Image (cartoon, rainbow, N blue to C red; front, side, top):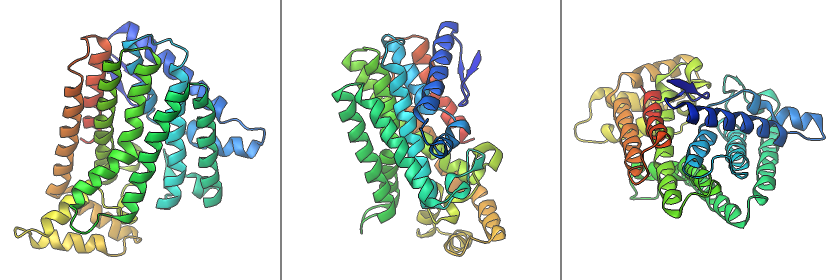
Length: 337
């Protein structure tokens, strides 16, 4: 059993391991090449998060999806570079919106330089992803454009909040389906599509990617509360401090609004509604949430989506890649404890 990539997926098949490792190494080279500019400062800013590392979850899914066709087909690695560049670009923008100071264990681009540099660098990465995408054909361009529309729509929906009468938890799941699930679905779809897999396999891996993507984000929600900075690569409680209502917080608020609410539920909500700019108050909120049943509810939701993703794999042939995709569901859940 070998651990592959920063995400830590265990792979038990030597041939699959070799293919995935070679593919991920080629993606890293592609990311470095795609973030070079004739202007040294742009190169430095664009490679800031690339060189900080990361889980490379999306390229990993492209590589595994490609195993159902020709994993060495010429479009596989460029497609993986496209989805990771797109993801990296959103991180630059997210850190500006969240006023984050740390990303992947290093200062965020906005903290290292300023907001303008971070936003423009994200735009630069989007442009480089589009340039590579153009060589993959009009169908790939259309798929990526639709996913990007969903991603931005999800971000806008999060900013606007749920409409009157719309359940906040359902709204949030719709948001992360767009913000996170859409691009991870593209990763599965591109891997199968670029490898020449049949339409049924492309469809299965698209649906799998959507569900495992939601599970992946829900695991991040849990990590924002339950982990330390070393585990998550960003400051714990960042979402809390910015007033972003992630799933554990939404479960808490639903519980506090119910007839069965306890005094502790209401007091914790009041703490979250207060000023969490103070490190002591933030630490108090994190400690209380870590002990609250809402965190376990969010963990169970993560498991549910990961199980749904695993079930989507049923029509695929039983092989090492299918087993690895199933193992990816387990790895996502394990991140949430």
